[in-house]
Length: 256
Picture: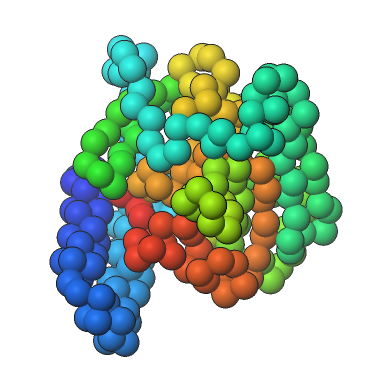
């Protein structure tokens, strides 16, 4: 029953957004349309948490369910000079900065992340494009990072700044970013993952560290994470909607 509810809520929210976003530009700019999209997103979020519970786990699977080849989503290789240099030395110098509304800013190497208690989970990745794939992820629960950084009381969201530049060649760089609220960020299955199927994360899957938020659609799971920022709101970040694809019109809440 819980799985059926998750699928219904996801499809209902995605369907409503698809119908509205398929209209012309002038329609999408009307205030009543954007207000309605926002209301649908809020309703979907509240309904999912009402039915499934704020800490309910996403389904986990057995090793026999793991896909022979795990399909990659989004960027397959940032290929910037900086990223290429890090990849060439095995990401030994890669660091993830944790800042914003925290008492204790952090700068963590991949080796230091691996030094924290880890979690391994076999879960299904659901892409907004309609495909799914099951894989085994190992990483550090994000809530341990947040606890170490001592999040301030006024923080409401966790923003993930990434290394993949989404801008067209020659344009001003626009790096991928995503965000979760603190409830989803501290969920036990939300990881800073550094392994896929028992091996170091491949470049096409977000090496050296990516986000796994197993109750969300794939575009929420930021790859190539460089910086984590605790914030009270999104207005000061890029398009102000909490994520790269959200700035293009996607829903901020992508619960499944």
